[in-house]
Image (cartoon, rainbow, N blue to C red; front, side, top):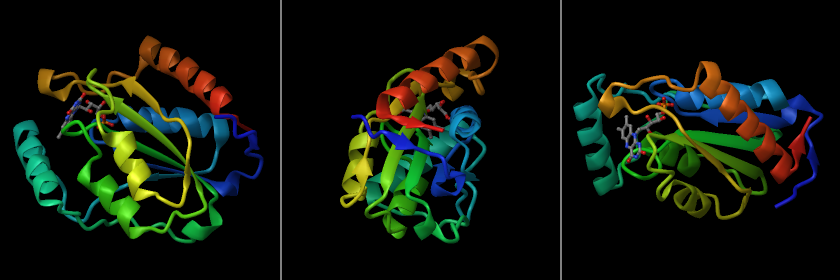
Length: 182
Ligand SMILES: Cc1cc2nc3c(=O)[nH]c(=O)nc-3n(C[C@H](O)[C@H](O)[C@H](O)COP(=O)(O)O)c2cc1C
């Protein structure tokens, strides 16, 4: 979809992302370098366990129960942003519970939502579809999904060095495709 959005006014853009091992953060920062705006990391009130197996078990449970963890992050003046980038890692082949919380507790109607994702090589799963369902009155544009880390195998931040340059080019092409430029 071509939006033809000239993102001149930086204050119109917010980039909200969730990141544990900083891959999604790396993509968020690349986007921020290119289009500007308000960059904000989503934090929940109680931290997830450091241990990988423990967080996987907790996230599975939360998804099964439809539990929406309370967030620490509140965005002031959300109504002033008309383009909101939403970044998240694939967890349990879907949207992470804190991102479900964010999309549920904030009114994003009439905004342009631009999703992006990193994953361990298995794709975004149900993530983009769930996001569309949680933003029924927003215009959700084509998302970008790229391979990030693989914590299960001890690979944490992988979007660095040459891989970061590669992802930067993907971000450029995607922004061009969806018509967002500064
Ligand atoms: C709890 C948890 C569940 C995950 N589940 C998946 C998954 O189902 N599929 C996948 O491809 N990657 C999965 N991953 C890997 C992350 O999506 C991947 O490492 C991503 O790049 C992490 O982003 P971050 O560095 O911004 O946290 C999972 C990671 C965690 C911590």
